[in-house]
Length: 566
Image: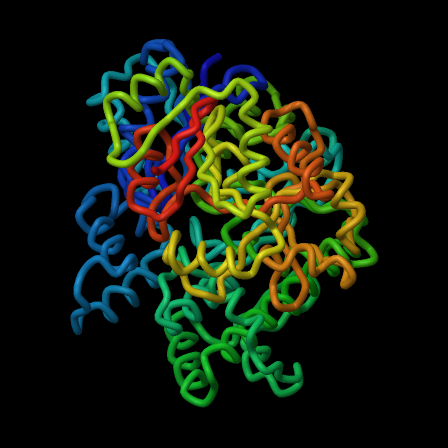
């Protein structure tokens, strides 16, 4: 059975499953080149079927999620969704009506008008699919948080686990607590949208003049530079109460915004960020501890946008009562297409386990294609050559202190560059880190970069390597103090980092790290996403050449081709 999962909201995209295999998965932004695109994923659908050599009549089941009033309204009137997208991403001028629009959006997401909204959503999606040429398929719709929960439980490799979802809001909920045992997910508790950790942090992000649903990681990074305030003096800790498995917000979403704005007036931005980050850390870990105690389950699966907070994840991992933590690598709404396809696959075929060794589910381009692309897109003052042992050449270039743009194999699924669409550099240089931030990627100076490290080096460098090594850059770790000098370019000011830990040494990327280790003594590289700030990760060689041409970087690798500026 061929199953197509689609998501048509924030960071829209598709996933295609067959049996227990993920054949293809991509988000619309990679093809439209609009960061976190919210359009119906027509480009992703067409591209994926063409790539796999499939026809629309091959697809037997199509699954999607979320039928709340706001989502249904956006499906009926796509211009409302587009207007909010442009407003959120600061692509349109501010107007006096924008505060009202934001307020309406938050209130509308709390409304669930079943069965009316479900039927309307199904009707609109059906209409779009038939317009695209789909026939004789079964359309299935699932709950937002069920899809988050399935995506993390079914890919975790845990036989039994506590499954927790936390985000802004979806189908009127901001979180769920579930058990996963005997291949079955069972929901035991919900957190309403009115008590949302995610919306709280969205408001903080917005008040700091950043883009909600996009820049929450910047808030976490900024918090590292604050003069710390004692927990008993933190006014934001009163915004939530956690009692057992119950979460209660002090104010509704609109009042929360007003109270946060009032408090921000009295504090520097970085201290406000610290207080908000600390609130998530304390309250979410308290909730997890209570859930572990109640269920007796010590392995944790996490998903939902708020679970992208790697500092919170690190604290959960280091709880004494927790044995292991797995975070679904596409934890935000961009992962809902895969989640809905997995729920459909479970209901139809009983499949609840996937071999999830990596996230390379996007397209791959051959050396022949790349050579043609280089000829079609000739850049001024550049030359290129084919290099058989490209890993050795690139290791030498990086060891000599250079930044390298690197495109290999199938594109990563999810928000993190994991070695196939990456920008690579030596890990020890603060000078290179600053150049990457301010000159190449054009990001804020305080945003840290991350390391990729071989498992052998992770054991040597990290002081809290507990549980399954995180392969997907979804978990924070502390670096041993005597090793921090060797990783200055890839650690936070507090000595933490968000590594990609390589456990399989057979890939070309792993071989590059091994070659670099021969030269430098350590198998660690700075690894950041191959894009400019505010743009999606590059997908194709053409995207890579376009991005390369707009930077001062000297070296670009496209499979076995080395492109250099003269």
